[in-house]
Image: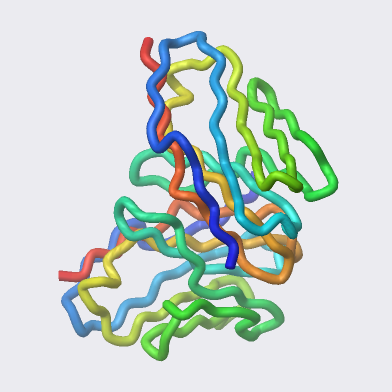
Length: 113
Length: 111
């Protein structure tokens, strides 16, 4: 069964470093999303991406964040200069179209020290 | 702004019991509602999606209902098993906006 895959499963970084989280969405899906979940809190939307551009972003998604689909299969989230409060589980999701089931990856646990 | 609430926050039941998890949302103008399962430290597994025009969806021992007008959904789990132990999340899609999640109900099924 097709699935969304995310790498790495766990990333440890020093405050101020850049990190890139990678995702491979399901191949025939057109909409891609990043969410995050700080420990003990709700899953929060970060950004959605369609047709090679951001379609929506939350107030969390500030200038330190960027997304890219560099090669038609990968979908990446870059955090330019990590802060302690960026420590969270980051989930990638994809769907065939808006309003359809969103399929989530297993997540990347980001720990900023 | 859509707000999603799930009660109870935690639930512990003996194996074999039927149980109901509740989800409420503040804005009834939704497109669909999705129930997820999350195991500790893991990703989100989609269980059921109910479109706004539907009243319920069933998958195996799971049945999800939707009452848009009252802003409520329930997830019914029949004959619970220890393997059902997980956190269950409800998420609302209002069409042109991303999923809004509740905080989840942590379910423990005791053998």
